[in-house]
Amino acid sequence: MSIDFLPSLAITLSLAAVALLPLILLALSHGPWKIPAPGRRFIVSAGITSVCWVGFMFLPGSPDLVDVFAGGLLLATGFLAGFTLWTLVAWGFTLSMLLTLARHPCRLTEQEWVHGYTNGKPVEAFARDRLGVLFRLGLAEARTGRVVMTPGRGRRVARVAGVLRRVFGLPK
Image (cartoon, rainbow, N blue to C red; front, side, top):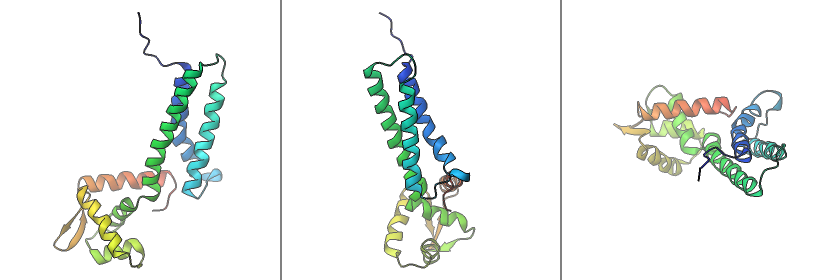
């Protein structure tokens, strides 16, 4: 009995459809097709990806129903993973707070940092809770009453997040 490790055509095309999602998101992030609202942008991207996937399933050599079902599960998994990453990049509160530190080259007091993030709105209790997350993840630390980004991990995560936001046309 031989085992074939190559995926079927339906599975391969489903994986290709999953790979289309970030490309479509990128296309809808800039230029004439830009969709400004991040939530709507993801939904439209997922819809276009789904239409492409359905089109792939009608290519010659009609796939088995089991392969179509498995491909649909792969697509759904891709949407869940993509949406998780998208929400972190587009709306991540803690990540946005880290980027506030990245935009200020000097050390900030906690009050200055909260004011820089919230544009003066009073959300200190919530901001301090989120700051605790940055501390636990090793992305920021307190030094003599000041909040600073950790030089290694914090700086790398801020750079990647900043690049992803620019690539996908999201606000800083």
